[in-house]
Amino acid sequence: MKHRWSTYVSVLSLIMSFVAVGFVLLSKPEVNVQGGNTQDAQKAKRMIDVMQFGAVGDGKTNDALAVSQAIAYAEKLSASQFSPESNIVLVFPPAEGYALDTPIQIPPNVSVEQHAPLIYTGDAYEPFVTIGEQGKTTRASYTGLAVIRKKQSAWLSSDPAKQAIGIRIFNATSSFIDIRQADCFTIGSQFIGAGKGFAYNEVRLGQFIGNHIGVELTNQKGKNGRIGWINENLYMGGRFSVRPSLHANEDRIGVVITSQDGTYKNNNNNIFIKPSFELSQSGLVQGAEALPILIEHGKLNTFEYIRNEGNGTYAARIVNGSSDNVISTGMGAARIDDRSLYPSTITSSASERVLEEHSHLLASYNLSERFRMLPDGHISFVGMSFLTDGSNDVLGSVSGQAISRNQDGTFIVKDTALGVMIDTRKVKSFVVKRASPGNSAGRVVIRGYDARGNIVNAKHGGWLKGKEENVPYWSEKRYGGVYITGSDNSDPLFFVVGPEVARVWLGIAPGSGAAVVGGMAIYTKPADYTLVSSGICNE
Image 1 (cartoon, rainbow, N blue to C red):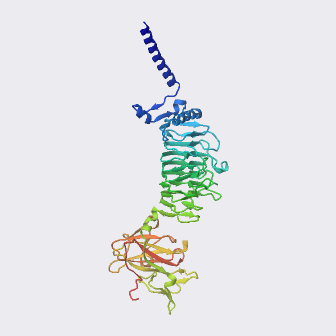
Image 2: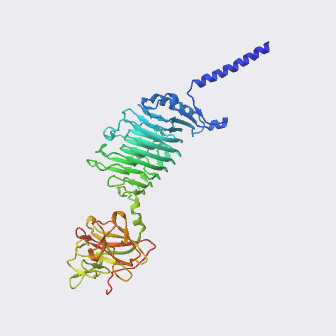
Image 3: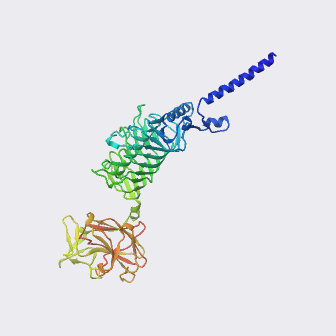
C-alpha cells in the first residue's frame, strides 16, 4: 500500500509539472521556433510576430503598443543569446499597414521581416524607425523595410535640424538591408556610423518619394567617445522622386555623403549602382535646386549608371576635402560642380563613351599659328583649305572679307568653310572638337568623295551616321552638297562614314551667324591612324 501511494504521488507530481509548463507557455505569446533537434533549435530563427501581441495592421488602428511589446520581447530574447549574431526576427505579417503614433527603436542584432508598411501618424519631427544604437554593432537581416509619414514633412521650414527621418540604422556590419519605401520625410533613410562603423553591407534601395533628402550616409562620435565611419557598402537601385509643387522654394537632394560632427571626413568606397534621380527642377522657385548627389565629406565613392532626369544643372556637387569620387550616368548628363579642395572627381556618361573611345589625337589645328596673310590680300591657313558656296573646288586661300581675326586669337568665319581632307578608306569613325565660345561655334560640314574623287551625293541614300541627338543632315545646296550640323554649338561631333566614301573634307562653317573659332582637333580610336591633308593638290 505504501509503495502504491508513492506511485500516486510521483504521477501527481508529473501531472503538476506539465500543468506548470503549460501555464508558462500560455502566459507568453506563441513564438514560432524553426528546427528539429535541440542543437538545431538553438540555431533556429525565433519569429516574433507583432500580430501575436495584438497588432491589427489595418492602417488605421494605432498598433504602437502592440509593436513596442513585440520589440521588448524580441530584445529580451536577443539578450539571452550567446552569439552577437542574433537569430531573433521581428515579423510584420502581410496587412494594409501598421499605424504608429510614436517612434520605435529596434535593438541591435534583431532582424526584421516586414510585409506591410509602417505608417507614422504622429506629427513630431523625430526619427520614426531606429535600428541599432550608438557604440554597438548590429549584424542582422532587414528585409522589406517600408515607412510612410502620413502627414508630409514640412522639410526645413519646420525641421531645420533634419530630424524627421523615416528609417535610421546605426552601425550595421556585414548585413543585408532591403528598404522598399521611405516617403514624405525630411530624410527618407539615414545610414550612420556612430562610435562604430557602418560597413560591408549590401543595401537594396526602393522608392524614396517626397523627401528633402532621399538617403544620407553619415557618421558621428558615439557615446563611447569613439568616432564613427561609413565605408565599404554596396547600394543597389533606388528611385528618388519629388513632385514639382512640393516645397518648390526648397532644395531637394537624392543622396548625401557627409559627417554630422566632422570627426571623420573620409567616408569611402561606398558604391551606388543604377539609382534613378527624378527630382523635378522644373517649377522650382527662389533659386531652389534639384541635386541628385551631394558629397560633403567623402572620397573614393562611386555612383555608376545613374539616371539623371529632370534635375538641375549638375548631377553632383563636391565640397570640402572630398576627392577622387566617380560619377557616371546611364541616362542624362554627368556634369558636376566640384568646389572641393582637391577637384579630382571623375565623371562620364553613357552618351559620351563613344567620344571617350576615340581618344587618339589624329590632328590638331591652332588657327593663330597657321594663319597667313598673303601679298594679294587673301588669307590662308597652313595645312588647311576652304569650301565656298557655288563651287565644288577646294581652295587654298580666300578673300580677307571671308575671315577676320580677333585680338584673343580666335577667328570669325563669315562666308566660307575652313577645314581639312581625311582619308577614310580604312578608318571610318571620327570625333571632331572645336575651340569655340559656346553658341558661336558655327556648324560642322562634311563633304564625301569616292575613290575616283567624285563628290558622293546623299540625296537618295545616306552615307554618314552619328549620335541620335546630333546627327548632321544632308544639304544639297550648301558647298556643293554636304552634311551639316543643325545647331551653333561647340559640342564634340561623332560620325561614321559608309564604305563608298574614300575621303571626306571636314570643316567649320557659319551657322545662324558667323562662327567664332580658335582651332579644331580630330580624334580616332587608339588603334586607328590615317592621313590628314589640306586637300590642295598643288600646294
